[in-house]
Image (cartoon, rainbow, N blue to C red; front, side, top):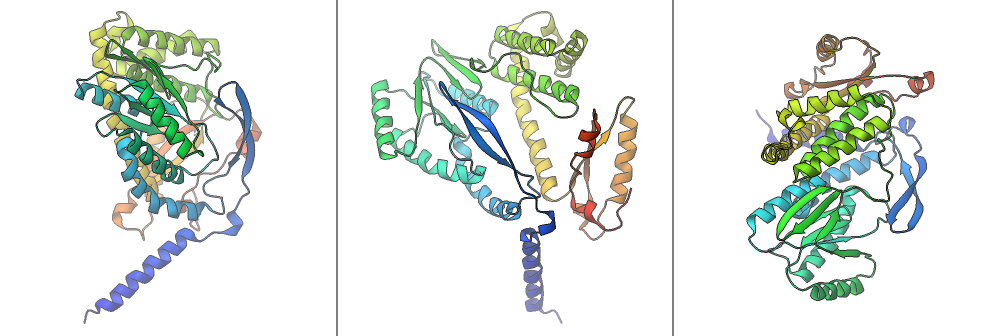
Length: 398
């Protein structure tokens, strides 16, 4: 006879055991965090050092508790902040264009930014910021206006007098003295890495370069710098198309990116190959020879819709990683064809890494393979091993 009470008790026991495993800490795997210092240039004419504590998410004594709380809190706060949250400059521009195209009134842009304080987790930071953001919205009465926040910066539209805005913000600052903010009001403003201009009611945007930052510099990378800088150039070109409304501004940014690679020692062949591949991939090779605004507008719209595809891919990988179905592996590679090797290696790993005790849906693994170049014995020996529960199984050999 079927005993529903026993089944419920069994399910409850399994649930408690699973949650306990999530929170249980293996002390032999705990590592002390690293402490290093980075310059803080967020304030004008003031540079200070900020202490950064960095530790692997798998080796911190509080990592499991932090992950458990984050899984509980993040969905709640994410739903609350989503309507007024900017992920990055591209997301900001996408939402700004939607607002401008749906509104027939004049466009005026105002930005507020606050200096960074103590390092908090992203979720707790959003909870705190959402509280004073809600209070500010009530003060400004912006129910029908454009308003959004990314980290500690806010951008919103304002169609009333500047003096009225100053009075509201000064009152808000006095009531909440723990919040510092700087305000910029102009026909042209910079928000994140975007330059926004209001020219006779028409919106113009382009990439913004901070005058205090050194020009023509490539990001610092560890390992295969050629591969990383190839990816950076492609990402920077995609960002340039999304940000620049004018084909002239895009070409200026493209020339700047090409010059950056050349100044840092990359050959003209290296740059031309990746530029040509970018335009070929997005079916816009005509823009290499002719600066046609209509053709550029097509490319601009194509890459703005490309955002949705990237988000979908990111969410899919995030879900796979959460279910321990995503495995990332690196292997040494100096030269030669990699396609056939990657194909055979994925087949071998897929057959041998399947957890037979897991449900069928969780037996489907996604394996991402990438190559690395080792230039010294020290970098080879100090490389961190890939982490995945399947690699911790006993008698797991390749």
